[in-house]
Length: 171
Image 1: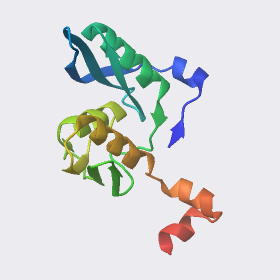
Image 2: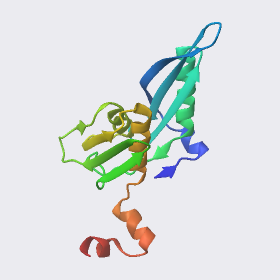
Image 3: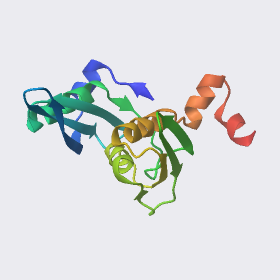
């Protein structure tokens, strides 16, 4: 997982996916104040993903703000050939637990709701996942991105340990 630099972000063609829009209300003595929150995921379907949460008086403004925040939080995720992930990974954020697992060619994305939208935005095509605990969409997305950011390929492990790839694979 690497955070993208400013000049790298400009070159990307990001696709935006709206996960949810929520109307919220602040009640005071005199009246009710309505506003909107929006949750957006942006990704290039080639290993880059980010999420944003925006709040505004109008729904369209909240969506725009969320999209701008998503651009600022872009991460590069390791994807291996076949559109899957290198190994199983589990992550927890607040009450949401997400478990992602590599799948064989032709399986597709087996995931629910918010987790599916993150995996599609990253560009994964063959992944199994399970969400446990909280079904809060914001926490599920954060847990999914946390799990994806923990993924490491054989090359990165070899670099960290300072040994050859063959030594890792053989034992």
